[in-house]
Structure formats: C-alpha cells, structure tokens
Length: 253
Ligand code: PGA
Image (tube, rainbow, N blue to C red):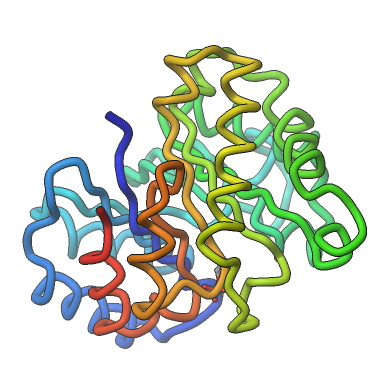
C-alpha cells in the first residue's frame, strides 16, 4: 500500500529558534505517527541537520530539502548538491516547486537531472507539478500536467519512477487561500495516476503517493485527503503553525 503523507513546506520562513520550537510542538502533539503514514518537513538548508536530530528518535517523521542543484558538483557558488544532502542523512527532496520553476526559471530538463541525482544518492524526490490559472481557465490542465511529468520523468527507469512522490499543486491555489475543490483535486490526481498507469503499468501507478498542495488547511484537509487518488498533502502556509499542521497530520486517512 502506498504511504499517506503530510509534508510541510516551510519555504523561506521561520528563524532557527522558531523552527526548533515548531518541530518540538509537533512532536508533542503527534508523538506517534500512524501505520502507513509519513510526516515530512521540508525545511530551509541551514536547519536540515537540527531538524533531523530533533526527529531522529521519532519513527514516521523525516526531513526534506526544498531543492538541490541539477549538477553533481563544481564551481556553482551558493548551490547545494544531492550528494551533500545525502551526506547529512537527508532522505527526501522537493524538486520542481512552481516557485522555483517561476523565479529560478528551472527547466524540465534540469528537473529531470535533479531527479536522477536524487535517486543516485538514495533521496526520494517529491516532484511538483500543476497548472497556472490561465491553463485552468483556457487550456487543458490534465494534458498540461501530463506534459510536465513526461518532460522530467523520461530519463528515469521504471524502478525509479516507482519510488517517486508526486505533488499536484495548482499554481492558482498556492498561497492564495483558493483551494481546488475535492472533486477538482480527485479529477487531476486520477488523470496523473492514469498517465502513470499508461506509461509504467498498474503496479507502479498504484505504488506512487500523489499529494495535493495549494492552501491545504485543517478545515479542508480531511475532505481533500478523503479522495481515492489523493494520498495526503504538501502544505505551505498552514504548516508553519503547530496546531494547524497537527490537525492536518491527523486528517490523513
Ligand atoms: P500553500 O503552499 O499551502 O501555502 O498554498 C503550498 C506549496 O507551495 O507547497
């Protein structure tokens, strides 16, 4: 059975002290994570080791990086490689978040390289996809997202694809307070799973956790997570508050 995942994306928020306190509060509120559930905290680079040490004795928790570079090593000032993340024990990395696609102009080819580098260092990528408002209103969101997947997954082996976590995050719902309806989320997650089924077969399609992201909060998490093809959420704003994120963890089916 695929895992149900509550993933926090802190983005560029919180001081070291605030982050530490937030993790400590989460651990107090949710000391035991349910069977088949996983909590992943994607924290800023400077807090990765601290966060890892805080959750080390708590099964069900893992720490993620929010990004890695698309090349293995070299003269790339300010960048962080997948091998560096692996060397400090990081097991997950967000790849292709829409904010990085937009502000850092990350290309599908670069994202494909990041995925390969993550896998070569035993890091599970959380691969983000999702359409803009104009695609939602004037285009075909299903085809758009399938194209995003095929453009970056094409160089992976089926064994690697089977280990991916995918996050469907409609850009129009990120940080806007607008959430896709449960039906809209299910429709897109079903389309993504069908694409995986067509390309890689049923076993792999059924194994991949597909998270929904975009203004998930305690008040809508249970309804969104209740869909058959939604395996949890990637949560930005609401993950910065211990009560909110704890309620979202508890909403995992
Ligand atoms: P949000 O962000 O929950 O604040 O909308 C989600 C994300 O960007 O991963």
